[in-house]
Length: 219
Image (cartoon, rainbow, N blue to C red; front, side, top):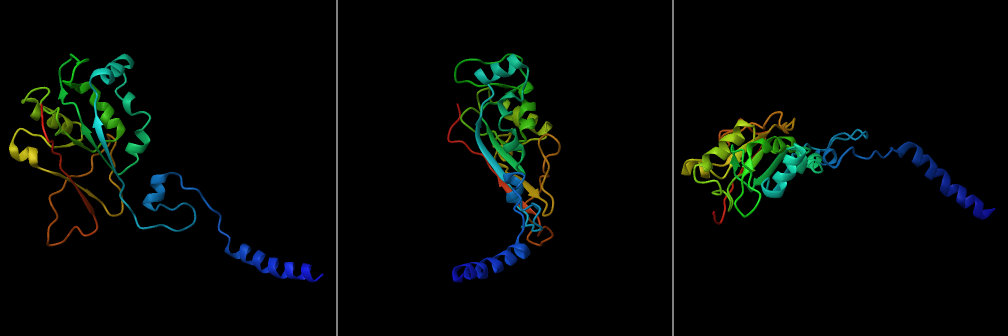
């Protein structure tokens, strides 16, 4: 009897606490929604966050280009990672192959050429900024240093690293994220570019991300 009374004395208060303090656990709909602090059903919202994803070499020449042509699907290289890339607020990548409006692909060797018909895949994946300075920047000649960044800009992707002038090549890209709403991208709308922050204020709530791209060498 004594033991049973002790068990009751312990269990009854615990049951009362469980009734009044219990709050159902709700799994986040995604890792990104959890990181952003979005409401998961518990009523608490953490401070907003901006998620930046940066990836390395993107090579759409040679065998990758062949696979795209066989399927007639420029999205093919990114289909398995699209949710991860486009789910971020800002997505950066290094474009390892210069763009070309040629219709002749390159299938062999170490000289790369990315046909412009493959660029919709970059938009599908959600890239906002592309670095164009790397050891393959000159693979399609010096004149292509202007074509690649200009074409990316025409497709709503901000280039950084090369240009037709010294100033353009060294100019960075700045993306400002609003404080209460993340930038949209993925081919819909590129986050706005803005000048460097003014020391006089006026942009206290936004977050600025700056991008530069350089290479140790070029062919």
